[in-house]
Length: 311
Image 1 (cartoon, helix red, strand yellow):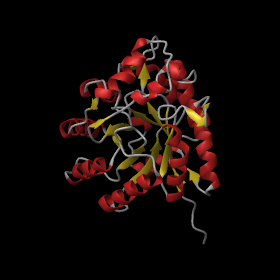
Image 2 (spheres, one colour):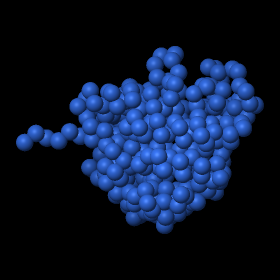
Image 3 (cartoon, one colour):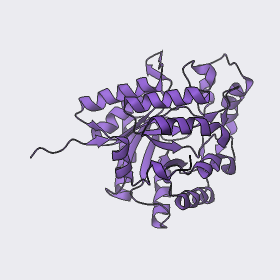
């Protein structure tokens, strides 16, 4: 009997706190734009939609639940996708501020950064000089002295809130130490199995984007968690598609989207999140992999189901 094809989960990070609206005209900002972008990504094959909100006037990242509500309701009405709400928000926010939307809406999945770190965005000032809003330049420049706080107490607080709400987590691991932090919480019984590990490569302050870095993360995760975890690859910027391809060939799930990279090719801005999903789907299917549906992703990750959220 032929062995069934492996199915991989595509996550699409629709908009986020790294890039600013002046960097790309295609970055969704308003609730309607975020909803349209997310729905297009789901139609292209993204099983999970990772979502941030922005102030519709300035494009500044916001954790105001009132800004999330319109696009959450529309996405839920028009797709079957798993919705993943950020608890990262922005490195400039307090933990209490970052938790507001996930606490309010009780999603199936929320992101959770697994350690404090330097989070250097300031090199983008060398590539982008013209900004519509002054906050954009300050956002990048201030990262020279920024520590993105994710203490053990912060992580424990977020885990307990999520566990009480039936929310599972996308554990964003930017470095090897973050895997060890995750193992600590697994050992304490605060993390349900299998953990969904999002390995993040190419952010200044975290692990680099070399294929050997990817291999090191995989070997360490295998040693700490055995085969009892779901692995996913997030390559920042130009590393998005190359690292996702390597990871998929090794059996990982993948994450793409305009939060992580504005590009579809060298010097070529992606015109939509859908375009990036279509690109990685084409590559995955060329590798003889099948794309998981939202319900298949729910089964793999042990999620509570779209009917159990508060939106």
